[in-house]
Length: 52
Image (tube, rainbow, N blue to C red; front, side, top):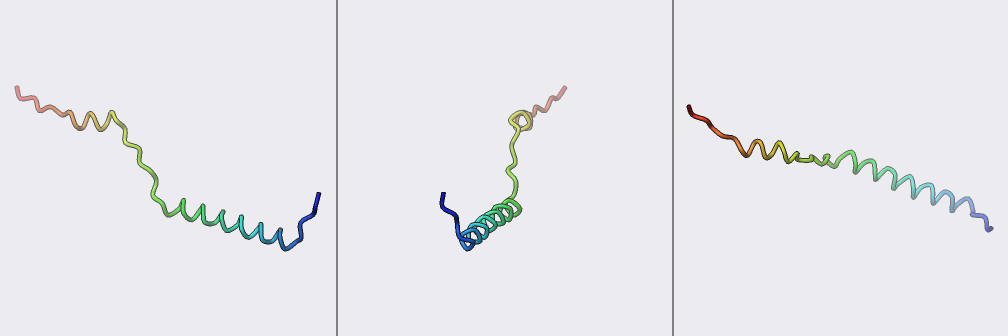
């Protein structure tokens, strides 16, 4: 099995560190997805005004 030169290990470390940082920075700045509950949306849409 061939061995890797130390410079290649450094390149791999820099590449994975950069992708790791980009992933976490994007997760920090992208707003979270808000799931809409269908029962709440349906109940708000179907209000009845009863007049006795």
